[in-house]
Amino acid sequence: MISTLILTKNESQDIADCLKSVSWCNDVHILDSYSTDDTVDIAKIYNANIVQRQFDGYSSQRNFGLNNIDYKNNWLLILDADERIPERLVMQMQHAIKEADDLVKGFRIRRRDFLNNTWLKHAQISPFYIRLVKIGKAQYHREVNEVMEIDGLVADIDGYFDHYPFSKGYSHWLNKHNQYSTMEAERWIEEQGGIIDFSLKKALFSKDFTEKRFHQKGLFYKLPGRPLIKWLYMVVARRAFLDGSAGITYATLQAIYEYFIVLKTKELLRKKY
Image (cartoon, rainbow, N blue to C red; front, side, top):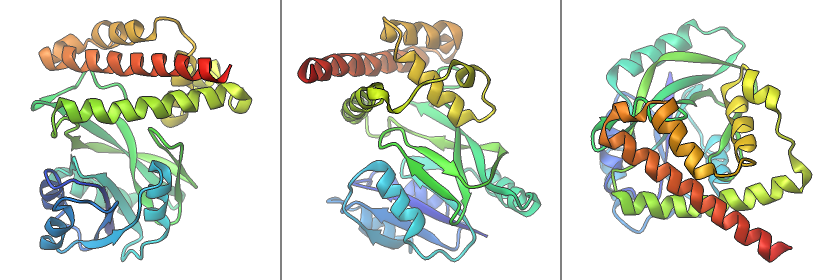
């Protein structure tokens, strides 16, 4: 009933455990961005179908996977290599598809982020993601922190999948978010050119989680002292301290990421004006 798409580039450390967690699936596909490590060789051991494509952007790569691979099933589960599917979620997904209204074309699932085996239950800001979609009814936009649009209704599945963003260490996380911060700064400059007006009403009251989060983030970018505000929000308002040292560490890293965006935005503005 469900096919699986996993996007990879140099994921030899994580891909085996990811593939083990979807061993129940009869149609697993790897969209690989020409890895230079053993990612593809490991995927072959698990009999995954492999397509390679030169990476040209996060949304464009994901959209290629949605639109250009021949899947056996009508529903598609989308994963990254550092994510895992618990056994209980498999049954929940199958049940959700079977019982879903015909108007439902996607499902939102809770993601549990871990740092050193500690679930960031309180520190994690955005735990809900659309990851199970009807083939032909989903599309991504934005090239960083991509947003998925569904042609139909989106329902929730009362389950979770697991994410290990620090599986490759702090240096890898920081390097990746250094790249993300550049893209976020560039996107912010573009949007401030008049392309997007952020809505306080949607930020507070939108029933669509993705839309609500998008406008919250856009308005947040206009505030002074964002890194400190983010750290206080995570540690105090969301009680990240209840996650112990992992929660404090994660809040600090997120504040550093926010500071990267602030610095790069100012740098781009100086160059532009």
